[in-house]
Image 1: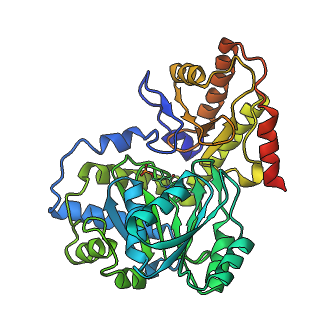
Image 2 (image 1 turned 60 degrees about the vertical axis):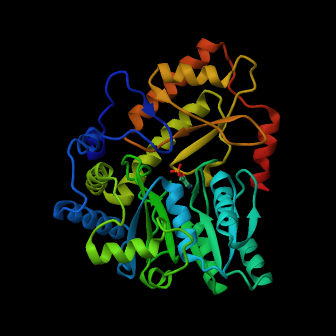
Length: 395
Ligand SMILES: *Cc1c(COP(=O)(O)O)cnc(C)c1O
C-alpha cells in the first residue's frame, strides 16, 4: 500500500467528501491541530510562522533563496489583491490574461485599485497562448506587468504559464501568477519558470483549512514594493518587513489555521512534495474522468488541457437530468459536487483535490451512475451545441 493510501482518512460517517476546489476535505490530523490555543506574540507561534514560510519557499526548489514568502490574512482573493496592489506601481500598466471567472476577478480588482490595464479575454476556457501575448506586448510598450492564472478553476483548464513566462520576459516585462488552485500540486519551480510573484492560499492543494493566503515574491520586488499599496492591511511590503523584523504578523493572525496548515505541510512532504501530491491528484482525475466518460458524460476540455485540480462536465441533454436533483442525490451518497461556470452551456464540476484517492473516485463514479438511474437518465451525453463549443478549442 502506498503512503498516500495510508494517509487518506475517510471523513466521519455521514460527512460528505468535498469534491470542490477549496475548502476541501482535510485529514483528521489537520483538524486535530486546531484543538489548541496559541498566543500570537509567543515564541512558539513565531516559530510556527517561520517554519510555514520556509516550507512554502522550499517548494520552489533550487533558486528559492531569491524569493521570500509573506502570509496574508483573508481568503485567496485578499492575497491576490495584496499582490496586485503591492507589485504594480501606480504608474504601471497591466495585461490580464483572462479565460474565466478568476481572470475577470483580477480585472475587477485592478479597476478598484485604479491601475491601468488591458485584458486579453479568451472567454470561458480558451487558453491564452504565448504568440498572442507576445504580439500584444510588441504593440503596447507601456505594458509593464502581465497577470496570468495558473489553473483557471472556473473551467479547470491548466493554462500554459511556461510559454507565457518566456514571451513576457523576452519582451522585458514582468509576470505575476495567480497559482491559487495549482500551487503544491503543479510545479512552479524557480529554476524552471520565471516570475516576480505568485499567490496561493491555505485551503487548496496544501489541504489546509481556509483563513489565509500567501504571496511568494522575489526579494528585490518585495523591497521595491514600499508605498505601492492603497491598503494598510493588504500591504505586502509592510507585512514582509514587519514579519522579518519581529517574526510576527502585523495584525491578529489566524492562529488555529496556521497550526492546521503546518500539519498539512508536513503531510505534503511525507506524500512526496509537489510530485507526490500532483501524482495522486492525477490518478484521482484519470479514474474519475474515465468512469464518467464511460457513463456517457463529456468533459469540456480534451485531455491536453485537463488539470488534475477540477474537471468541468457538460450536463446531459436528457430532459430527466436536473442539476439540482443530481446535486442532492450525489450529496446523499456522500459527495458534494460543484456547479459549473460556463456561460454558453450548462455544466457542473468535480474536484480532484483534498483527502481523496482513486478508491474514493471510483465511488464517486458509482454514485453518479446510481443518481442517473434514480433520475431516469439513460443517456448522459451533452447537447450538440456543447460539442460544437468544444470543437473551438481544437481549431
Ligand atoms: C480559489 C481561487 C481564488 C481565491 O478565491 P477565494 O474564494 O477568495 O479563496 C483565486 N484564484 C483562483 C484561480 C482560485 O482557484
